[in-house]
Length: 110
Image 1 (cartoon, one colour):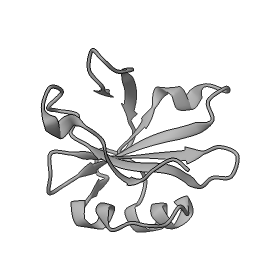
Image 2 (cartoon, helix red, strand yellow):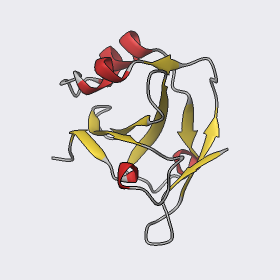
Image 3 (cartoon, helix red, strand yellow):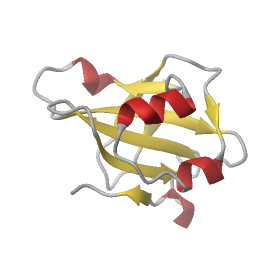
């Protein structure tokens, strides 16, 4: 399992589902489409998924992709109603107290 957040945030817990799934930082930060099917075609299956994805009441499923050329992870939230990307961000989940721990938004919630 992996988790994001610190004592001032909500802690998200992820289940690793595809440890071989690794993406490149420049490819993630260059992404500009909200089409999740295209995203999955380019980057493959996610490294991990949020345990909240199992709950019925959540509005978006959240997935994590490990970035090979960085200590950061890409986090993508996909709306359940239309299957489009609500938000795509990059975050260093290993340095919980550093400035690098802040979300770097590639696509923000609309």
